[in-house]
Image 1: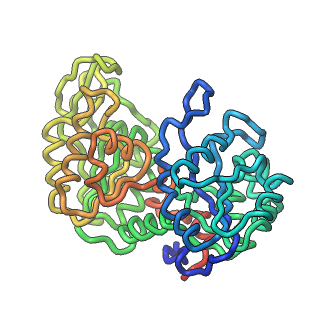
Image 2: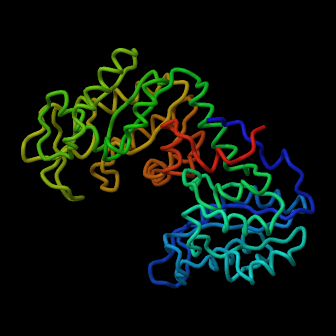
Image 3: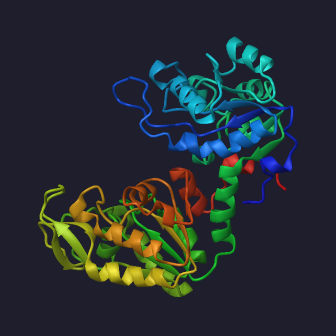
Length: 398
């Protein structure tokens, strides 16, 4: 995939209407009060929005929120986002009542340079997730330029993330530009040694990633729930630990492929297990190949922590996706904590794939020590798999 895409700085936006796709899919309070519980994604969009306004563009922002499935669901309205965005920008954000209906069309037509409006949740339209050309055309008709800055949504070929680029000049905002430069750079031309740390619960969700990284990494470190399928494939006893029976052969193939390619594939030598999956369970340290029948693996042990921390120490680039254990339970968060700490002390370029690893790094207070924390969970995974991301492919090449 070509990562060398035109950015908002490569195109004239002064006096023009710009359709800006953001990722405002923010968590809301469960009580229906319309309170945003974390505005990180709105703040992340500010540099691109501010640049466009400073350049005297008229900004028509849009985003999805949740999964309304083509119906108007009032609790998933973007009105609270418009309110928060106007507070952060210190200027009015004009809210449309629809996406491409009469209200949006009228407000877009009247929008002046230096003003910003927000369309209603794009997924209130049935055609959004189907990438309906009619919807894409209707959205594009309101603007003269399309800017995509929603990295968290570029792995989906939807009308507002890919379709509109068929009808307008299409460039990236600063968020996507950073993702492309840092993750794209690490995949295309990494500073070596390249160490990939892969955790999370399922081998099946990381297959493509492991496969792709075996082609480019020097070391691959395995942690989290998927460890146990690897250990079982190696002939270990894993007790009641998480197991994906169907993927045992695949794990063996990967170990073999790593050996053939001279890639170090590290599994934890020791494991912290427990008799039940609970925050209060007593942590028991065992050899990884001999987990007792009545126990399940919950975290990596001290020997594994030492080996993994050493692997990171002299790395040139580290990509981390997925926790090492059940980090939500303090007694079983030590592995994830230690890896985050090792990364924070390393001189390597450190890239955290979104989702759980990003949450762990933020929760543990190491976020400011990382080179880059991806803003997209699913998108960063597909990026690491080497897959073409429709919302990136749709942008104009430099």
